[in-house]
Length: 113
Length: 115
Figure 1 (spheres, rainbow over the protein chains, first blue to last red):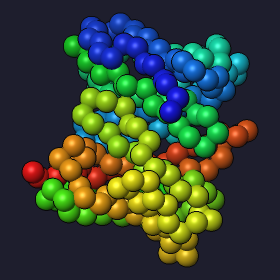
Figure 2 (cartoon, rainbow over the protein chains, first blue to last red; figure 1 turned 45 degrees about the vertical axis):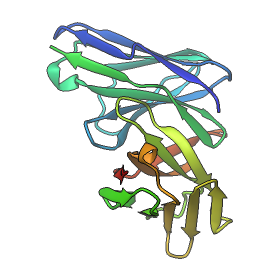
Figure 3 (cartoon, rainbow over the protein chains, first blue to last red; figure 1 turned 30 degrees about the vertical axis):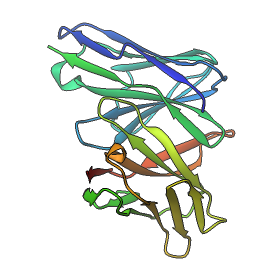
Figure 4 (cartoon, each protein chain N blue to C red; figure 1 turned 60 degrees about the vertical axis):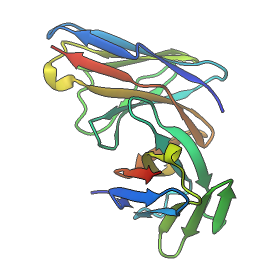
């Protein structure tokens, strides 16, 4: 299957700082990427849909000013968690769609201290 | 509103046994039903998927059964192995602009296969 690379896999940051997570589709062009958040032993919660060259579409309840999404090219989408707080600590996962199939990155474990 | 209901929440099976996980959906607009396998600390990986125009799909030890009228689908893992121990998510997808699909996930099933 297609490869989606997510970086970093783990990050620890101080409260109040911003963190950027990158998601790259390595062997195909992804016009749409999705960002999910997953709490321990819980399901994947869709945060936003990232569309290349246009603004992201956020799910209800997700603060767009806090979770900034940029999809500047067909192979790269970034999620920036701004002014991070301990409650933002979570596992963030991106996926890139190729037709019906969604390929997921390895995930990023964010810990805000 | 939970659009995709998954059960059981956890499942323990002996090696060589059959693992069965069930999902039900509400929205008839869904037309793509994948199953994902996730190991701790990793992203989900596509296991097998089905479209509503077929009632069953088999790939190796993994089979999806689909009942369109009941709006239910299930994953069967035959000859379960300890290496199958993971969390399994069902999902239902529908088009979200263009040719891409937006997925709604079930809550997951933690499968443990005892040796």
